[in-house]
Amino acid sequence: MKKILSVLLTIALALSLSICAFAAKEPPARPGAPRFQDFAPPQASTQSLIFELPTVTGITAVWNGDTEGLFDRLYGPFFHPENVAITVSFAEGGPETLDHWYDNGYGWFWEIFYDYDNATGKVTFFYSDSNLRAAYDDTLRRGDDWSWEDYQATLPRASFSIPVNLRLEHLNGLPKTALKLGEGQRIPAGECVIFSFTPAKSGQYYFYSENHGSAEPYGELYDAGFNFLTCHYNYERHDFGIVWELQAGKAYYMLVSDLDGSAGEFNVTLRSDIRKLDLWGMIWDTLTGGMLLRRWALYESDLYSFPGTSDWLDNLDHNSVIMGNGLGTWLGLRILALFGL
Image 1 (cartoon, helix red, strand yellow):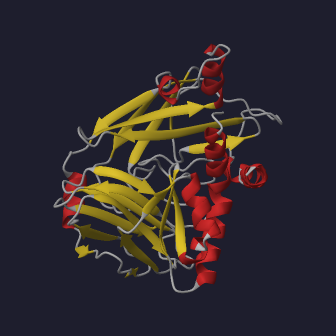
Image 2 (cartoon, one colour):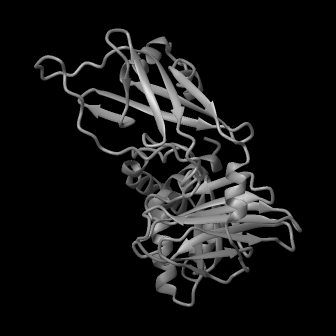
Image 3 (cartoon, rainbow, N blue to C red):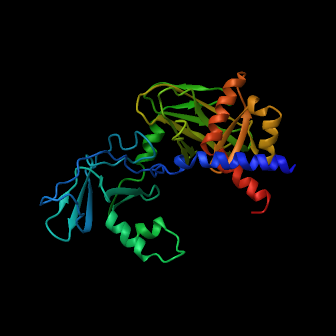
């Protein structure tokens, strides 16, 4: 028994180290945040090899009222310099209306981002830069937690409201396709599709994409009133997978799109024959050949298992990728918990 536990601890450590580079990547953008582009840095007024950010005292935000494409992709609304004029005021010099919302250089950055309140339609824009970030960091004492909410409260901001029914009208107007358990649906290249599903039984269900080729499938889950529940995109596998507790007799909608525009087709499948695995369940699945017969899915901090394909090599390949994309950390944490550490 001690030898087995020693081997497991060694495997867990190796897998945990293998994903450090993945964990260090930038986190996915918050729902509603713009996808920033690359821009040439602004020129300094005098020649210098060091660019110093000016002091920003405030911003204004003016929406042009155009609703075209506002909710076409991702968890909208999607605002950008073409439909919202952001004007920045400085401690010295006149104001400037921005033609891009992000820039960075050696030791500095600035950005415009926004939050959207679906209940009220209020959109709040924030200005953030490396100076403001450093000023907030300086307020923290040893042992204090870094808080996004506290930092956000220190930033210059501006807001306006859009009609609260715009997003609902857009989603209601899209055609709906029934999603059946265990039957994969092919998504044509470049299309945004809404699937509907009403479970006969309450329980955990697994929505996922596969066979994506060059596409980057992204999924959003809504309740019957199109209230946003969750979304997912796997930056390593370029797929999505969502496990959610559904209630019998209630309608749910899954909005699916390709983050890469019209890169290619992919499949979307829904399953209810999944089971959550603890440490011993994962070990049992491995020792009894379940790793070849079943497929694993990591969602948030939990591991799930469901029936795989008839091709055991395909199942093994799928599960091997899962092992390299976070299972090491999951396994290590559960082994430590087993010993009360």
